[in-house]
Amino acid sequence: MTLLRRLAPGVPWIPWLPVAGLVGLLAWAITDRPDFASRHLYLRAGLLLAALGLSFAFDDPVAPTTDSVPSPLRLRRLLRAVLSLVPWSLCIAVLVWAGSRDGVDPVLILSSTADRPQLPVGRLILEAGTMAAWGLALASVFAKRWDEEPGKLASVALLAMYAVSWLVPERWTLWALPNGTQWKASHPWWWVAIGLGAMIVTVASWDSRRQRPALRPGKTRRRVGEEGVTKTPQSGACRAPQTERLGADLDHSPK
Image (tube, rainbow, N blue to C red):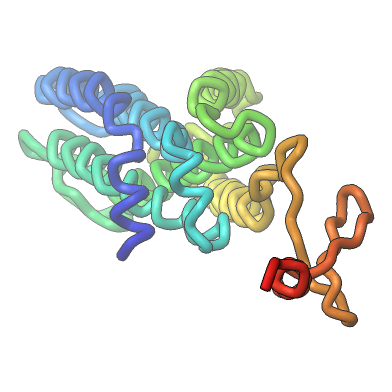
């Protein structure tokens, strides 16, 4: 709980304000679209915005405070990711709610015998999870070099990856539609992408570039040797223990 109290104020909530506003605008714009084929660009843009907000999860302006907590980096990253998943989940829920209004039925898996337009919620969650995993993966990678604010670089890199993914040839595209030939064929690639993103986050969070503060120049850390002599690792000099010096002073004091 101590770690959670220290991490919660440091989670960057401000980037979620424009994300929430833009997601709300997209949700409002979806309502006059008749089916998923005409809504998918709005929905997928909203998923990208949510992932961009999540890419700021590892920004740590209070790093000196959290580094003093004797907890592994992976635990701190996990707690920060869980806290940031709260607004991310709200954004995804708003998009699914908006996409399933006005005669569109939300379904986990599409059915070929349905009479009404359907919203493939399962596929949307898979795409949202993949974008979120890569937002966290890029943030964790950049945090190895830029500790305090990797979110800016991670968000730019995620935008670049998103743009490049739309330029992939149609036979390998990820952004398929239910009536397209690549809809089912693209499912395994999404699972591979989300697994790879999760693996990168795990590996990058297992160790940290940041170590405990080193000794400043002029500062020494004392330790007592086997013979009771105090040694300073930096200078290598040996000093008598404080108790021996005190005893010597008492012997030479006037009676």
